[in-house]
Amino acid sequence: MKRINRRQLIAGAAAVSAGAVLRKHAFSLASATLSDNAASKPLGREVIPFQAVPFPMKDVRLRPSPFSAAADANRRYLRTLPPDRLLHTFRLTAGLASSAEPLGEWEKPDCEVRGHFAGGHYLSACALAFASSGDEELKRRGDMMVAELAKCQAQHKNGYLSAFPQEFFDRLRDGVNVWAPFYTIHKIMAGHLDMYSLAGNEQALETVEKMAGWVRSWADPLSEQQMQRTLLVEYGGMGEVLSNLYAVTGKKEYIDLARRFDKKWFFDALAAHRDELKGLHVNTHIPQVIAAARLYELTGDQRYWNIAEYFWNEVTSERSYCTGGTSNFELWRSDPGVLSTQLSSQTTEDCCVYNMLKLTRHLFEWSPQARYMDYYERVLFNHRMGTIDPETGTTVYYLPLGSGYSKIYAKPFDSFWCCNGTGVEEFAKLTDTIYFHDADSVFVNLYIASDLHWPEKGIRISQQTSFPEEQGTALLISSERPADVDLKLRIPYWAKTGSVKVNGQALPAFTDPGSYLVLRGPWKNGDRIEVSLPMHLHAAPIPDKQNLLAAMYGPLVLAARFEQEPQQNWYRQFTAQEKQDPRPTLQFTGKVDDPTTWLEPASGKLTFQAVSQNQRITFVPLPSIVHEKYAVYHEIAASS
Image (tube, rainbow, N blue to C red):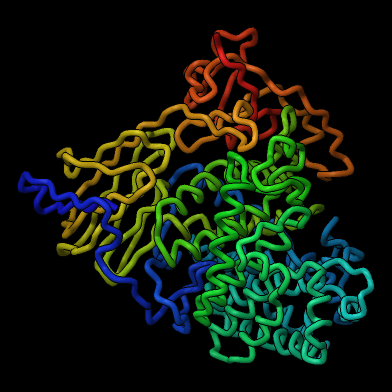
């Protein structure tokens, strides 16, 4: 980091300290928060020092922008879901009457993961939406769901709660084929814990503790060998939610139970820094690493840190595409770094990036390096913002990166794929990573129009920007008295140049891309910081084939935009009804490492067109493509 003492600058002198890391030592917070969702209730049982933590979402609000529009669309969709339909299969399983119309696909009465969205993701999304926007209607809906689900739990008389019968777990124990029962139980437990932590619902904590008691009664009779065999079936984030339950309650039995969900052969390879990921189902395993990260925070066991750090580095460097997404047909199907053969209609499953972002937040808390937030920005601005339909608020399962495909969005009442569940959570918590803090500094991680209130420091920061349409941002300070707070501004990896002004005065120093520029306080009411971050075209090549690449402009992946998909294909089943034919990879002539040799600005914001080519094709940011077919990766033939 570079640190600039504003008081000296105002006096006309610059004080720049290159290579400094943090002004303060790592610190422990007496009221540390759930690193998953920036919970507002104190936990305080972490044993490692955090160097940065997120602000509670109640202290951050979005200003008008594409992000607030996406959050609004998501909340509108959540309000359309009738509680009686969400509760239908839970009530039937508990022996209670229900005449509601069943929901479709993954929430159908005969689907083996029914309940994962209706009693899990939905509760998390309601709690997150309340925390991030103050949406009282969604809190009320969440509270009502918690009360009704508690009635279902009471009918089982043993703490069990699900929309499918307990016999599914008999099948799991006996090695009979079953579709991921613990995956669904995790979602239901996490939804209730979020309703407690984020929305203050005490009954939700009672329900999740009873569920944990049932899980313990099921797992206790199993030998370690039997337990490890059951872990061959996807089990979501059971280790994470049980760890979080320990953090809330302090009951050691929960963290002991969490460690029973350590998949030993998987963790052993990662701990030894071996990439044995080929052939694995991606989103089965990322939540297991998140659990390792949470266990590191709560136990101090360095082996868990080693697992999480190595895994993140390996996936982001060797198994991720230009969008930051990972997976192809839900799997890692190739050796490390081999991605040129892995472009299809089913690349980059949504759930995978949702969980990689969660993992990134943990690593940033331990060591707030800009590279973590560079990755976070890449995923958020390209993959996540490119997966929500602005009309329905529903999301996709995959973000295709093969040439000529289009996005397939969920039907509002007849899909409920896993990625729709993580989608309603993601777009309910867009405020959770914009700002972090340490003892007396604010990390400005993401350039998103938003307002931050730090009541303990008596300071408000309003980030006023239309980034990335605007190439920079402005921070306006409100404070009744001078606030001795440092501002740590992330200078992205893609920023070749940049500048900062304080109250109109240019600062005679900047810092390198991929680092933080630290402006020292104190700040007074009305101070204005302007950050200029000029954007440039640059290439994002496939690791194993350097002339197969995507063009990027600043943080944005550009896509070649083709014709619109017929409307009847916008919302459909993502596999059986897909029937999409690929197009040949586009070929351009120019310099492999310089997209300006084959792209030039065109009319329209953030719009480009191919130049000196035999075809005239328009390029736009990937998130701006909603219902059109497109291509992201292209072959570049070196010009003579």
